[in-house]
Length: 524
Ligand code: ATP
Ligand code: MG
Image (cartoon, rainbow, N blue to C red; front, top):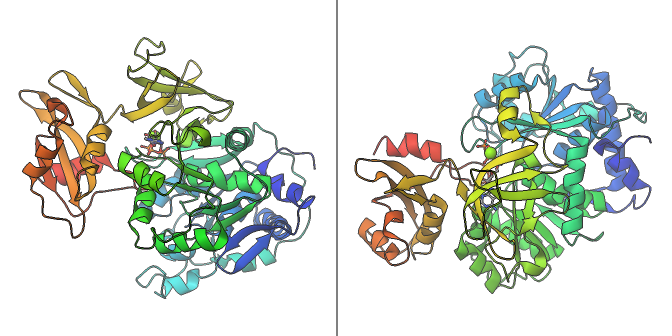
């Protein structure tokens, strides 16, 4: 075994702890030995299907062991894994398959219709994770409609079983590309961040250094594994450490709470919207949460309300900040600071330089706002096929995040909002995330989004879109505005409050402000 690639992990793991449970999915428990055997077979099968070093193998599906198996097997061949957001429509998946030039696509049970609709793509081989045929016929849990699997599609288990058992001897180095992961598409079309075995490995090392991971970790992988934080902050590091990863296909608050108690889950990554949904579940108050040691939350602003609710249950929420381009770790609030500095995203990770700089490129003074820029071995190599976008994002060796933050006297960072979403009202900067946070503190408000819109007198003013909580006392827009008075400066208070049934969000619950603008604002 000469290689440093991620594909070598299963074989390395079985040297010490072969029979330990690695991946748990419902009743299925795969030990490290199982993962090693299956990924080796899958790698052989992919090679027999013509996959060579540098080729792209895509996966589109919700959380499932086959997602990680495909990653390891692809990596063993020195090929590049393209991981696709399972919530994308067929046309969006087509864009990614074409952009990345994938020759094999493994798809989950719900994606038979995608495969059928994209069957025209030349030179693409489709592999259906078992259950896909049932999904295609409209069986429970499957996609509705009458889609058939792509012509010539082969079942995943059948494909894997036909693979030989040779040890793959393809040396992979840290500079070799391992993965193309597309950004969430919160602000527009997703971009393919290309990571190497080295940039990913350093993300995993960094996570192990800064989080209290032990070998007996029981990690709940319920956030989407097709997003950077769901995959890289805890799931992969737990595997590297030899712990147990419990994979949940989709997010059901009841099932998460049951699993935490029954399996004595020690660590979990979640996005704020999931944390909110868990806290709202009737079973929350009665669930034993005492096993949770590492609860990492990030991906979008963390409302104070959510932090308070979990702190009341004794759970120290560690805020993480980062993005697909940085694999994602830039900042982390360590466990020991979680209560003391609640609301902060902490300080830079072990190997990462994270600075908050003003327009002159100098570090801001405490309390001043600037853009987060980062440097470190976990930064992507670049965007796939997009040299101009890469050159714009990585300047003078620093990755420019497009996110705004402040730093306190002790060096702890507070994320404000995206530069793109900030607006200027009467000459003053308004950070919509701050206004949304205040709106969420109003009893009866379940969700809130604020955007800046042009105004003849003030330049721009805020418009708020609010979803009321079910069964909450009836509020009027004026009540909402009145509740903000005294709490927020006048110029930050939205000039218009509109109640809506739902807000456009990404798979991880991020507010898609551009869609709020086009769908809600323009029709208002
Ligand atoms: P796209 O780049 O396609 O518009 P995206 O930026 O949402 O989508 P991701 O890479 O998944 O794609 O998300 C990274 C972004 O998520 C960050 O740039 C930041 O805006 C936001 N984010 C991450 N962590 C936090 C956090 N702790 N608090 C606030 N925002 C966060
Ligand atoms: Mg982004």
